Length: 426
Image 1: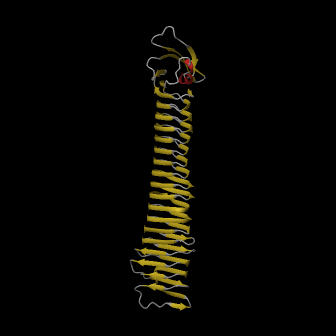
Image 2: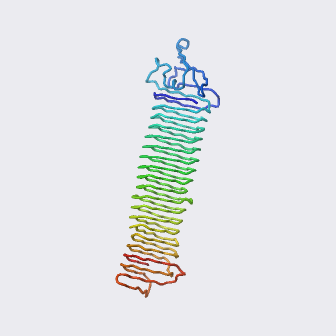
Protein backbone atom coordinates (compact mmCIF):
# COMPACT_ATOMS: atom_id res chain seq x y z
CA UNK A 1 0.00 0.00 0.00
CA UNK A 2 1.05 3.57 -0.67
CA UNK A 3 -0.33 6.41 1.44
CA UNK A 4 -0.58 9.85 -0.10
CA UNK A 5 -1.61 12.68 2.20
CA UNK A 6 -1.28 16.41 1.71
CA UNK A 7 -2.91 19.49 3.17
CA UNK A 8 -1.29 21.61 0.45
CA UNK A 9 -2.34 21.66 -3.21
CA UNK A 10 -0.35 19.06 -5.12
CA UNK A 11 -0.13 17.82 -8.67
CA UNK A 12 0.76 14.15 -8.67
CA UNK A 13 0.91 11.62 -11.48
CA UNK A 14 1.01 8.03 -10.20
CA UNK A 15 2.13 5.55 -12.84
CA UNK A 16 2.16 1.79 -12.45
CA UNK A 17 5.25 -0.12 -13.51
CA UNK A 18 5.92 -3.84 -13.83
CA UNK A 19 9.33 -3.18 -12.28
CA UNK A 20 9.27 -3.60 -8.47
CA UNK A 21 10.75 -0.18 -7.79
CA UNK A 22 9.75 3.38 -7.06
CA UNK A 23 10.80 6.54 -8.87
CA UNK A 24 10.01 10.12 -7.91
CA UNK A 25 10.47 13.06 -10.27
CA UNK A 26 9.80 16.60 -9.12
CA UNK A 27 8.34 18.25 -12.20
CA UNK A 28 7.89 21.85 -11.17
CA UNK A 29 11.50 22.69 -10.24
CA UNK A 30 14.17 21.39 -12.60
CA UNK A 31 16.98 22.49 -10.26
CA UNK A 32 15.89 20.43 -7.27
CA UNK A 33 16.36 16.67 -7.30
CA UNK A 34 15.32 13.95 -4.92
CA UNK A 35 17.51 10.97 -4.13
CA UNK A 36 15.81 8.06 -2.38
CA UNK A 37 15.80 4.45 -1.37
CA UNK A 38 12.79 2.19 -0.89
CA UNK A 39 11.93 -0.28 1.85
CA UNK A 40 8.77 -2.00 3.05
CA UNK A 41 7.22 -1.77 6.51
CA UNK A 42 3.89 -3.25 7.61
CA UNK A 43 2.80 -3.76 4.03
CA UNK A 44 3.48 -0.15 2.99
CA UNK A 45 6.27 1.44 1.01
CA UNK A 46 8.67 3.63 2.99
CA UNK A 47 10.71 6.26 1.19
CA UNK A 48 14.10 7.36 2.57
CA UNK A 49 15.29 10.40 0.66
CA UNK A 50 17.32 13.58 0.71
CA UNK A 51 17.30 16.73 -1.36
CA UNK A 52 20.25 17.76 -3.50
CA UNK A 53 20.83 20.91 -5.52
CA UNK A 54 23.12 21.50 -8.45
CA UNK A 55 25.29 23.95 -6.60
CA UNK A 56 25.54 22.15 -3.24
CA UNK A 57 25.23 18.48 -3.94
CA UNK A 58 27.93 17.56 -1.42
CA UNK A 59 27.18 20.04 1.36
CA UNK A 60 23.43 20.62 1.37
CA UNK A 61 21.86 17.34 2.35
CA UNK A 62 19.03 16.40 4.69
CA UNK A 63 18.11 12.78 5.23
CA UNK A 64 14.92 11.46 6.75
CA UNK A 65 12.77 8.31 6.67
CA UNK A 66 9.17 9.22 5.77
CA UNK A 67 5.92 8.29 4.03
CA UNK A 68 5.25 9.63 0.55
CA UNK A 69 2.78 12.12 2.05
CA UNK A 70 5.68 13.92 3.77
CA UNK A 71 7.28 14.37 0.40
CA UNK A 72 4.12 15.83 -1.10
CA UNK A 73 3.60 18.18 1.82
CA UNK A 74 7.09 19.56 1.48
CA UNK A 75 7.73 19.23 5.21
CA UNK A 76 10.97 17.35 4.51
CA UNK A 77 12.66 20.67 3.80
CA UNK A 78 10.47 23.40 5.24
CA UNK A 79 13.36 25.90 5.48
CA UNK A 80 13.73 25.98 1.71
CA UNK A 81 10.05 25.26 0.85
CA UNK A 82 8.43 28.16 -0.94
CA UNK A 83 4.63 28.45 -0.80
CA UNK A 84 4.54 29.78 -4.32
CA UNK A 85 6.17 26.62 -5.62
CA UNK A 86 3.90 24.02 -7.13
CA UNK A 87 4.18 20.61 -5.50
CA UNK A 88 4.32 18.72 -8.78
CA UNK A 89 5.58 15.12 -8.82
CA UNK A 90 5.47 12.03 -10.98
CA UNK A 91 5.71 8.84 -8.93
CA UNK A 92 6.32 5.51 -10.63
CA UNK A 93 5.08 2.66 -8.41
CA UNK A 94 5.15 -1.11 -8.49
CA UNK A 95 2.07 -1.87 -10.54
CA UNK A 96 0.13 -3.97 -8.03
CA UNK A 97 0.09 -1.54 -5.10
CA UNK A 98 -3.07 -0.10 -3.48
CA UNK A 99 -3.34 3.67 -3.02
CA UNK A 100 -4.74 5.45 0.03
CA UNK A 101 -5.12 9.16 -0.79
CA UNK A 102 -6.23 12.12 1.33
CA UNK A 103 -5.65 15.49 -0.30
CA UNK A 104 -7.18 18.95 -0.69
CA UNK A 105 -7.41 21.14 -3.78
CA UNK A 106 -5.16 18.81 -5.74
CA UNK A 107 -4.84 17.07 -9.09
CA UNK A 108 -4.07 13.36 -9.04
CA UNK A 109 -3.57 11.32 -12.18
CA UNK A 110 -3.50 7.54 -11.83
CA UNK A 111 -2.35 5.42 -14.77
CA UNK A 112 -2.01 1.66 -15.27
CA UNK A 113 -2.23 0.52 -11.66
CA UNK A 114 -3.36 -3.01 -10.82
CA UNK A 115 -4.36 -2.20 -7.25
CA UNK A 116 -7.21 -0.22 -5.73
CA UNK A 117 -7.69 3.47 -4.91
CA UNK A 118 -9.27 4.76 -1.69
CA UNK A 119 -9.46 8.56 -1.83
CA UNK A 120 -10.82 11.20 0.52
CA UNK A 121 -10.59 14.98 0.85
CA UNK A 122 -12.14 17.90 -0.99
CA UNK A 123 -11.72 20.10 -4.07
CA UNK A 124 -9.71 17.46 -5.91
CA UNK A 125 -9.56 16.31 -9.51
CA UNK A 126 -8.93 12.61 -10.05
CA UNK A 127 -8.02 11.38 -13.51
CA UNK A 128 -7.90 7.60 -13.78
CA UNK A 129 -6.74 5.54 -16.73
CA UNK A 130 -6.75 1.75 -16.25
CA UNK A 131 -7.22 0.73 -12.63
CA UNK A 132 -7.10 -2.98 -11.86
CA UNK A 133 -9.52 -3.24 -8.95
CA UNK A 134 -11.76 -1.01 -6.82
CA UNK A 135 -12.21 2.76 -6.72
CA UNK A 136 -13.62 4.53 -3.67
CA UNK A 137 -13.90 8.31 -3.39
CA UNK A 138 -15.49 10.40 -0.61
CA UNK A 139 -15.59 14.12 -0.02
CA UNK A 140 -16.86 17.44 -1.36
CA UNK A 141 -16.20 19.15 -4.68
CA UNK A 142 -14.52 16.07 -6.12
CA UNK A 143 -14.15 15.81 -9.89
CA UNK A 144 -13.63 12.24 -11.00
CA UNK A 145 -12.91 11.24 -14.58
CA UNK A 146 -11.73 7.86 -15.69
CA UNK A 147 -11.64 5.00 -18.11
CA UNK A 148 -11.07 1.31 -17.56
CA UNK A 149 -11.76 0.31 -13.94
CA UNK A 150 -11.64 -3.41 -13.23
CA UNK A 151 -13.42 -3.53 -9.85
CA UNK A 152 -16.29 -1.84 -8.08
CA UNK A 153 -16.80 1.92 -7.96
CA UNK A 154 -18.12 3.62 -4.81
CA UNK A 155 -18.45 7.41 -4.77
CA UNK A 156 -19.98 9.68 -2.13
CA UNK A 157 -19.59 13.21 -3.41
CA UNK A 158 -21.14 16.66 -3.15
CA UNK A 159 -20.92 19.62 -5.54
CA UNK A 160 -18.67 17.75 -7.93
CA UNK A 161 -18.65 15.76 -11.15
CA UNK A 162 -18.33 12.09 -12.08
CA UNK A 163 -17.46 11.00 -15.61
CA UNK A 164 -16.48 7.33 -15.89
CA UNK A 165 -16.57 4.76 -18.68
CA UNK A 166 -15.57 1.14 -19.31
CA UNK A 167 -16.28 -0.21 -15.83
CA UNK A 168 -16.28 -3.93 -15.02
CA UNK A 169 -17.75 -3.91 -11.51
CA UNK A 170 -20.88 -2.66 -9.80
CA UNK A 171 -21.16 1.13 -9.47
CA UNK A 172 -22.66 3.07 -6.54
CA UNK A 173 -22.74 6.88 -6.65
CA UNK A 174 -24.24 9.30 -4.14
CA UNK A 175 -23.93 12.86 -5.30
CA UNK A 176 -25.67 16.17 -4.57
CA UNK A 177 -25.48 19.22 -6.83
CA UNK A 178 -23.44 17.17 -9.26
CA UNK A 179 -23.42 15.71 -12.73
CA UNK A 180 -22.89 11.97 -13.10
CA UNK A 181 -21.98 10.43 -16.48
CA UNK A 182 -21.51 6.66 -16.69
CA UNK A 183 -20.92 4.70 -19.90
CA UNK A 184 -20.16 1.07 -20.72
CA UNK A 185 -20.79 -0.50 -17.31
CA UNK A 186 -20.75 -4.32 -17.28
CA UNK A 187 -22.55 -4.61 -13.95
CA UNK A 188 -25.34 -2.88 -12.03
CA UNK A 189 -25.56 0.84 -11.20
CA UNK A 190 -27.03 2.42 -8.05
CA UNK A 191 -27.37 6.18 -8.27
CA UNK A 192 -28.60 8.74 -5.73
CA UNK A 193 -28.68 12.32 -7.02
CA UNK A 194 -30.32 15.42 -5.57
CA UNK A 195 -30.35 18.75 -7.43
CA UNK A 196 -28.17 17.34 -10.18
CA UNK A 197 -28.24 15.13 -13.25
CA UNK A 198 -27.33 11.65 -14.36
CA UNK A 199 -26.54 10.33 -17.82
CA UNK A 200 -26.24 6.55 -18.09
CA UNK A 201 -25.44 4.74 -21.35
CA UNK A 202 -24.84 1.11 -22.21
CA UNK A 203 -25.40 -0.42 -18.78
CA UNK A 204 -25.34 -4.24 -18.83
CA UNK A 205 -26.96 -4.77 -15.43
CA UNK A 206 -29.89 -3.29 -13.57
CA UNK A 207 -30.11 0.42 -12.75
CA UNK A 208 -31.51 1.76 -9.49
CA UNK A 209 -31.95 5.54 -9.19
CA UNK A 210 -33.25 7.65 -6.33
CA UNK A 211 -33.41 11.38 -6.97
CA UNK A 212 -35.09 14.68 -6.35
CA UNK A 213 -35.14 17.80 -8.47
CA UNK A 214 -32.83 16.15 -11.00
CA UNK A 215 -32.76 15.11 -14.65
CA UNK A 216 -31.80 11.62 -15.74
CA UNK A 217 -31.05 10.29 -19.22
CA UNK A 218 -30.88 6.54 -19.84
CA UNK A 219 -29.84 4.91 -23.10
CA UNK A 220 -29.14 1.25 -23.83
CA UNK A 221 -30.01 -0.23 -20.45
CA UNK A 222 -29.80 -4.02 -20.75
CA UNK A 223 -31.39 -4.66 -17.35
CA UNK A 224 -34.34 -3.27 -15.44
CA UNK A 225 -34.33 0.44 -14.55
CA UNK A 226 -35.94 1.39 -11.23
CA UNK A 227 -36.48 5.05 -10.37
CA UNK A 228 -37.88 6.58 -7.18
CA UNK A 229 -38.17 10.19 -6.08
CA UNK A 230 -39.95 13.42 -6.86
CA UNK A 231 -39.59 16.57 -8.98
CA UNK A 232 -37.45 14.77 -11.57
CA UNK A 233 -37.32 14.38 -15.32
CA UNK A 234 -36.46 11.05 -16.92
CA UNK A 235 -35.74 10.48 -20.61
CA UNK A 236 -35.07 6.83 -21.43
CA UNK A 237 -34.53 5.01 -24.71
CA UNK A 238 -33.78 1.39 -25.59
CA UNK A 239 -34.24 -0.21 -22.18
CA UNK A 240 -35.47 -3.61 -20.99
CA UNK A 241 -38.00 -2.27 -18.51
CA UNK A 242 -38.86 0.63 -16.22
CA UNK A 243 -40.39 0.73 -12.74
CA UNK A 244 -41.11 4.17 -11.27
CA UNK A 245 -42.58 5.04 -7.89
CA UNK A 246 -42.70 8.72 -7.00
CA UNK A 247 -44.39 11.99 -7.86
CA UNK A 248 -44.07 15.17 -9.91
CA UNK A 249 -41.76 13.44 -12.37
CA UNK A 250 -41.93 13.88 -16.14
CA UNK A 251 -41.32 10.56 -17.87
CA UNK A 252 -40.51 10.07 -21.53
CA UNK A 253 -39.84 6.41 -22.36
CA UNK A 254 -38.97 5.25 -25.87
CA UNK A 255 -38.40 1.63 -26.98
CA UNK A 256 -38.86 -0.80 -24.11
CA UNK A 257 -37.94 -4.28 -25.30
CA UNK A 258 -38.22 -6.65 -22.33
CA UNK A 259 -40.76 -8.69 -20.41
CA UNK A 260 -40.28 -6.43 -17.35
CA UNK A 261 -42.44 -3.83 -19.09
CA UNK A 262 -43.35 -0.43 -17.65
CA UNK A 263 -44.82 0.01 -14.16
CA UNK A 264 -45.48 3.59 -13.09
CA UNK A 265 -46.91 5.21 -9.97
CA UNK A 266 -46.85 8.97 -10.44
CA UNK A 267 -48.82 12.17 -10.00
CA UNK A 268 -48.92 15.79 -11.15
CA UNK A 269 -46.76 15.33 -14.24
CA UNK A 270 -46.67 14.04 -17.83
CA UNK A 271 -45.92 10.51 -19.00
CA UNK A 272 -45.11 9.61 -22.61
CA UNK A 273 -44.59 6.02 -23.72
CA UNK A 274 -43.52 5.07 -27.26
CA UNK A 275 -42.81 1.62 -28.73
CA UNK A 276 -43.39 -0.45 -25.62
CA UNK A 277 -42.93 -4.24 -25.97
CA UNK A 278 -43.98 -5.49 -22.58
CA UNK A 279 -46.88 -4.97 -20.15
CA UNK A 280 -47.85 -1.45 -19.02
CA UNK A 281 -49.32 -0.78 -15.60
CA UNK A 282 -49.88 2.79 -14.49
CA UNK A 283 -51.53 4.41 -11.48
CA UNK A 284 -51.68 7.97 -10.21
CA UNK A 285 -53.49 11.27 -10.47
CA UNK A 286 -53.34 14.55 -12.35
CA UNK A 287 -51.37 13.00 -15.19
CA UNK A 288 -51.18 13.82 -18.85
CA UNK A 289 -50.49 10.44 -20.51
CA UNK A 290 -49.51 9.76 -24.13
CA UNK A 291 -49.42 6.17 -25.37
CA UNK A 292 -48.06 5.39 -28.85
CA UNK A 293 -47.33 1.95 -30.30
CA UNK A 294 -48.12 -0.10 -27.20
CA UNK A 295 -47.61 -3.76 -28.14
CA UNK A 296 -48.73 -5.46 -24.92
CA UNK A 297 -51.50 -5.26 -22.34
CA UNK A 298 -52.03 -1.93 -20.56
CA UNK A 299 -53.78 -1.38 -17.24
CA UNK A 300 -54.49 2.20 -16.15
CA UNK A 301 -55.80 3.25 -12.73
CA UNK A 302 -55.92 7.04 -12.92
CA UNK A 303 -57.72 9.92 -11.27
CA UNK A 304 -58.20 13.41 -12.71
CA UNK A 305 -56.05 12.56 -15.73
CA UNK A 306 -56.15 12.54 -19.52
CA UNK A 307 -54.91 9.75 -21.79
CA UNK A 308 -54.30 10.12 -25.49
CA UNK A 309 -52.54 7.86 -27.94
CA UNK A 310 -52.10 6.15 -31.27
CA UNK A 311 -51.68 2.53 -32.36
CA UNK A 312 -52.59 0.53 -29.29
CA UNK A 313 -51.92 -3.04 -30.43
CA UNK A 314 -53.40 -4.94 -27.49
CA UNK A 315 -55.96 -4.46 -24.78
CA UNK A 316 -56.45 -1.56 -22.36
CA UNK A 317 -58.26 -1.58 -19.03
CA UNK A 318 -59.11 1.84 -17.55
CA UNK A 319 -60.44 2.59 -14.10
CA UNK A 320 -60.34 5.51 -11.72
CA UNK A 321 -62.19 8.78 -11.32
CA UNK A 322 -62.58 11.72 -13.70
CA UNK A 323 -60.19 10.47 -16.35
CA UNK A 324 -60.78 10.92 -20.07
CA UNK A 325 -59.25 8.85 -22.84
CA UNK A 326 -58.79 9.57 -26.55
CA UNK A 327 -57.18 6.78 -28.62
CA UNK A 328 -56.80 6.67 -32.39
CA UNK A 329 -56.37 3.45 -34.39
CA UNK A 330 -57.03 1.23 -31.42
CA UNK A 331 -56.14 -2.30 -32.57
CA UNK A 332 -56.64 -4.26 -29.37
CA UNK A 333 -59.25 -7.01 -29.26
CA UNK A 334 -60.75 -5.77 -25.98
CA UNK A 335 -61.34 -2.44 -24.28
CA UNK A 336 -62.68 -2.03 -20.77
CA UNK A 337 -63.44 1.14 -18.79
CA UNK A 338 -65.17 1.00 -15.44
CA UNK A 339 -65.79 3.19 -12.42
CA UNK A 340 -65.23 6.93 -12.50
CA UNK A 341 -66.12 9.55 -15.05
CA UNK A 342 -64.67 11.17 -18.13
CA UNK A 343 -65.06 11.26 -21.89
CA UNK A 344 -63.99 8.24 -23.94
CA UNK A 345 -63.14 8.46 -27.64
CA UNK A 346 -61.98 5.37 -29.54
CA UNK A 347 -60.95 5.10 -33.16
CA UNK A 348 -61.19 1.37 -33.91
CA UNK A 349 -59.35 0.06 -36.97
CA UNK A 350 -60.11 -3.66 -36.61
CA UNK A 351 -62.97 -5.83 -35.40
CA UNK A 352 -63.05 -6.05 -31.62
CA UNK A 353 -64.19 -8.98 -29.53
CA UNK A 354 -65.33 -6.90 -26.58
CA UNK A 355 -66.00 -3.28 -25.63
CA UNK A 356 -67.14 -2.87 -22.02
CA UNK A 357 -67.76 0.64 -20.67
CA UNK A 358 -69.62 1.44 -17.47
CA UNK A 359 -69.18 4.99 -16.19
CA UNK A 360 -70.89 7.50 -13.94
CA UNK A 361 -70.66 10.31 -16.48
CA UNK A 362 -68.98 11.40 -19.68
CA UNK A 363 -69.66 11.03 -23.38
CA UNK A 364 -68.56 7.92 -25.29
CA UNK A 365 -67.64 8.32 -28.97
CA UNK A 366 -66.60 5.32 -31.05
CA UNK A 367 -65.28 5.76 -34.60
CA UNK A 368 -65.50 2.37 -36.36
CA UNK A 369 -63.50 1.90 -39.54
CA UNK A 370 -65.12 -1.50 -40.06
CA UNK A 371 -68.76 -2.44 -39.61
CA UNK A 372 -69.71 -4.01 -36.28
CA UNK A 373 -72.12 -6.95 -36.46
CA UNK A 374 -71.65 -8.27 -32.96
CA UNK A 375 -74.04 -8.03 -30.04
CA UNK A 376 -74.54 -4.59 -28.53
CA UNK A 377 -76.33 -3.27 -25.48
CA UNK A 378 -76.23 0.51 -25.03
CA UNK A 379 -77.79 2.34 -22.09
CA UNK A 380 -77.65 5.97 -21.00
CA UNK A 381 -79.73 7.04 -18.02
CA UNK A 382 -79.41 10.72 -18.89
CA UNK A 383 -78.26 11.35 -22.43
CA UNK A 384 -78.74 10.35 -26.04
CA UNK A 385 -77.75 7.42 -28.25
CA UNK A 386 -76.81 8.01 -31.86
CA UNK A 387 -75.45 5.31 -34.21
CA UNK A 388 -74.77 6.71 -37.64
CA UNK A 389 -75.74 4.34 -40.46
CA UNK A 390 -78.00 2.12 -38.36
CA UNK A 391 -81.38 2.26 -40.02
CA UNK A 392 -84.57 1.49 -38.12
CA UNK A 393 -82.73 1.05 -34.83
CA UNK A 394 -85.38 0.78 -32.14
CA UNK A 395 -84.34 2.80 -29.09
CA UNK A 396 -86.38 2.19 -25.99
CA UNK A 397 -87.17 5.15 -23.75
CA UNK A 398 -88.11 5.14 -20.08
CA UNK A 399 -88.16 8.69 -18.82
CA UNK A 400 -84.62 10.04 -19.31
CA UNK A 401 -83.22 6.57 -19.94
CA UNK A 402 -82.44 5.41 -23.47
CA UNK A 403 -81.59 1.77 -24.26
CA UNK A 404 -80.92 -0.26 -27.39
CA UNK A 405 -79.65 -3.78 -28.02
CA UNK A 406 -79.25 -6.27 -30.85
CA UNK A 407 -76.71 -7.98 -33.10
CA UNK A 408 -74.97 -11.36 -33.15
CA UNK A 409 -73.14 -12.52 -30.01
CA UNK A 410 -70.83 -14.72 -32.10
CA UNK A 411 -69.40 -11.63 -33.79
CA UNK A 412 -68.34 -9.70 -30.69
CA UNK A 413 -69.77 -7.84 -27.74
CA UNK A 414 -70.29 -4.12 -27.08
CA UNK A 415 -71.68 -3.15 -23.67
CA UNK A 416 -71.92 0.55 -22.76
CA UNK A 417 -73.79 1.95 -19.78
CA UNK A 418 -73.63 5.59 -18.68
CA UNK A 419 -75.38 7.26 -15.79
CA UNK A 420 -75.02 10.58 -17.58
CA UNK A 421 -73.67 11.24 -21.08
CA UNK A 422 -74.18 10.68 -24.78
CA UNK A 423 -73.23 7.56 -26.75
CA UNK A 424 -72.17 8.21 -30.34
CA UNK A 425 -71.06 5.55 -32.82
CA UNK A 426 -70.10 6.24 -36.39
